[in-house]
Amino acid sequence: MSDQSLIQIDQILLTFPIVDAVKIETMMSYDPTLDLIKELIEIFNVEMKDKLILIKKEFEIKNYEELGKLSHRIRSTSLNLGTMRLAEIFKRLEYLSAESNPPPSELRLLIQAAEKEYVLASEKLDSYLGKSREK
Amino acid sequence: MKRYKILAIEDEQTTQTLLLNSLGTKHELTIAGNLQRSRNILNELKPDLILLDINLPDGNGYDFFKEINAKYSTPKIPVVFLTLESDLKAKVQAFAAGAYDYITKPFSREELIARVDAHCARSSEILSAQYVPSHLGNLIFNQEARLVYKKNSTGQNEILNLSPTEFKLFEYFVAHMGKTVSREKIAKNVWNKTHFQSRTIDRHVSSLRKKILDTGVLLTTVSHEGYLLHTDEENV
Image 1 (cartoon, rainbow over the protein chains, first blue to last red):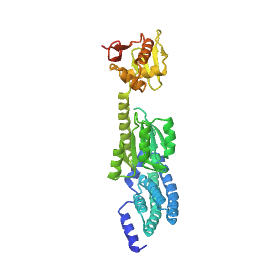
Image 2 (image 1 turned 180 degrees about the horizontal axis):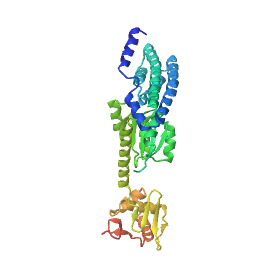
Image 3 (image 1 turned 90 degrees about the vertical axis):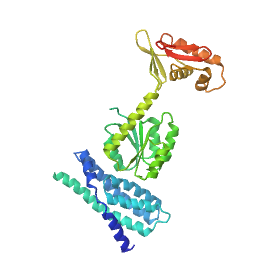
Image 4 (image 1 turned 90 degrees about the horizontal axis):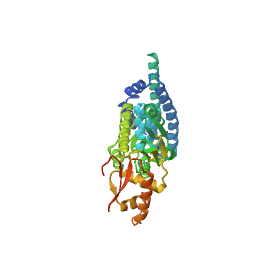
């Protein structure tokens, strides 16, 4: 994997917010007790950890079809929580996996970016809950 | 507002939670995470609307859509695709297959509720427009229960004792209330036969006529034409 590729994906991701603030605030407005958003964040964390492990496993055994399916599913989770950078990464992983000979170096790069972005997104989502408690 | 029965076929957990939060309090929402579970549910429940994801763990939403369309052709269950695919090709494919609507994930709560309510109300209107009248003179025709009730002298409803063939014949007449139907059409639609002894039809009509006597519903012979079911008030 080249430094150039790393810079490219990082630059693309910078055009997306880690978390779409409007999306989160709208969901918080549906349920003032915040039970809904708490439940969604909990599912998000469990699903992300679980699916990232599976995605790495499928990548190692070159089962790109399954890797694509997992990416599709987790893209939906990312979009529902407004984690836009993660959604973009999983979209790319899904589409790349569907190609006849997906380049492993690109896939690896995206998986690494997903792991990094998940940490940032999770922290950001927690910070929304914290902010809301302070109010 | 009426509570409709909605079946959502969706495997992703945050979407399931959002669906429950959006539709669960307004309607009777059942969620199935895969197609096999959906088939089991559909054997017991006929929903007013189905929300269908395209990529499911045990199959494809489009194939399942064709399957349920073939199984529940009359009346059709309205199906709304709920999917991540936002490209035009996927939308056109869904509408070409006969989908009622196409909602892209992530959906807005307000838009989802508005679309579901509108589709359920429209589908309910279509169904009630197709539904045959349930009150005919002093008779109550319950098509779903396959029963006809007759008001007795004390004003109470009692079951009219009709044979299965008589019920089918009566059902056919009710669906063509106020219109003369020929013996050929009766033979074809009730007995599923094109060549038939008209005496058999006449015998059943005669028996049915005796059973609905004094109910305000008349089964009249129209010379050289066939039979006409009408109420007392209608002009023949």
